[in-house]
Length: 87
Image (cartoon, rainbow, N blue to C red; front, side, top):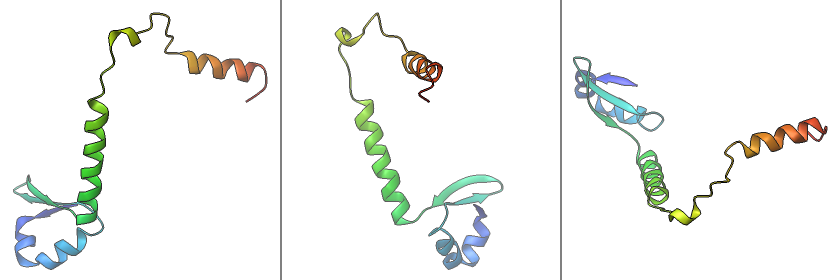
C-alpha cells in the first residue's frame, strides 16, 4: 500500500498499524522513499534470503553434467501414464 510521507507525519500510528497486515510503501511526489513492514514479515523475508543464498551457493562439478539428460523426462513420463490410463 502506497502512503504519502505527509500522511505518515500526520498519523504515524495508523501507518504502523497497517504495516502489521500489509507492506506500507512511503512515497514523496510519487517516488518511493522507503517501506514499513512488520517484524514478523521482516524475519520471514530474511529467512527466504538465507535459503536463496544457500541454494545459490551449491555448485556441481562438471562430472554431474549428463549428456543423456532429457529435460522433458517428466512430461514424457506423464504422457505415457496418461496413454495407459493411469492418470
